[in-house]
Amino acid sequence: MNTTLKRAVGPAVAAGLLVTALATPAAAQTPGSTVFRLFGSAYLSARAGVANEVTATVDGGRLILTDTKGLAVGGGCIRLSPTSADCGSVTSTGRLSVGLGDGDDSFKGSTISLRTLVDAGLGKDNVATGSGGDTVGVSDGVGNDTVDCGAGSDLVFRDAGDTIVNCEQRY
Ligand SMILES: [Ca+2]
Ligand SMILES: [Ca+2]
Image (cartoon, rainbow, N blue to C red; front, side, top):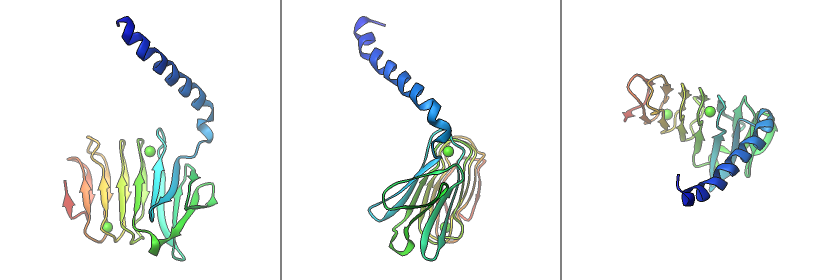
């Protein structure tokens, strides 16, 4: 490596190591996912390194999101417990977007009619969406995922070998 490149890369590498060192002790207490609302849509974003078990249900007209690995609750959602949150009136919610990140994750939302987008990311994932027109992505290069898109006209991005049920359009 020449001197100029060393100078440019050195501090960035050092900063990266510092962040990793600081993050490690707190990791055990860090929630598995963060939920929030933005522009009338609800979001759940999983943290890296977690095998998330996520559900979406409707209770009394409210959209309830859970992750057994714990939730951080952002704007527009109300904490119900360490693992669940009320993310607003389902009729005022345009759609639900879920990013499961890496790990062997599951998403169960088969009882809801809200349009749902699930990016299952890496790992062996199990995704079940409801009666809305849903979009599910399990194309991580490995054919070991399972998807049930439920009723409605649904779209899936998958690999050969993935088990796909009830998804009308497959890419
Ligand atoms: Ca994950
Ligand atoms: Ca569906």
